Image (cartoon, rainbow, N blue to C red; front, side):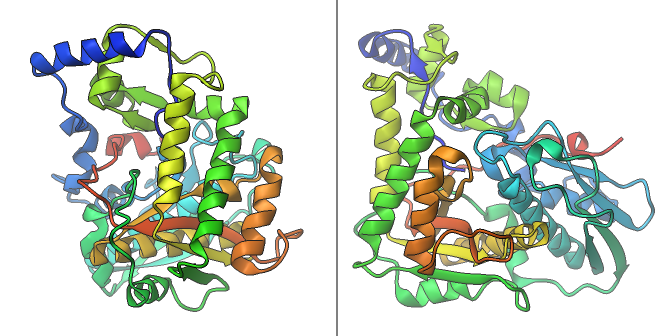
Length: 393
């Protein structure tokens, strides 16, 4: 979920800088996203039906590459059926679909919270037609979950953070340590009665190895052409593209908008090693890694149901982080299952679980691995597609 400026420039930096100055003088350089692209973060304005209101909150859930891979079927009274949009998966960086299902778990957790806030309880049945196959290429349209509405519903205190939740994708403030007591509050926010385990550290002796792991695994994703191109294809540059798609990786900084206005982007290939764009991308990943002031992780078995459960636990941690004013940002590269990442996949399990990488779905598996720290500025809301786009018809 951590992707930044990896666009290859077809022109020189001096020209782009000059263009940036010209556009700034014209008053057209605003790094915020178009208001319509982030309107989901205002809540379900104008929605009165209980299920649609709940879905309006749930679509703000964190998800890999901001694909928003959810399809919702409301045609059965008193039921919400959740499926995966088959066009919104990541075959290169997530070939087993694990990260996609974590995003479904986050959606389900927010959905349940939003129903409860309206005085409605929900019974979630995972995989009513059986679990998805092991390989992403074999997936079909079977439901991930069938949610049955029932009387009752106990509001969750964390619901107050749903529309305030953020994922900071900038360097953290290295002058502010994360207190052990705050870490403990984060780790205690996950649902009880699951096989998942939440761990973390703010120990200065442990941070260097974990920071290095983040940086080295990020380099693998950046230097593997097919995984890099997967991100490039999902990049939305400037207000027009962001508003058109309202998903993917949005870039709206003044420099990028200036370069885009001159038609100087080349998104047909990854940045060449040693190029300015390559160095910029590497520098961002290195900055994110080196400024991590702590780490948290979620581990457990690796069945399809456990992947969904991991997403539920993860979004609760992020909501708790929001309430505490601390940033929590996935560094997901080391836990990706494509072949070139295998050494780092092994390393992350050794570092945080003290055991080899899993060999079976029952073995302990690192499902989420995140850096924590204090952002140095405002963290923007992430674009979301209109509510109607998530409805299965």
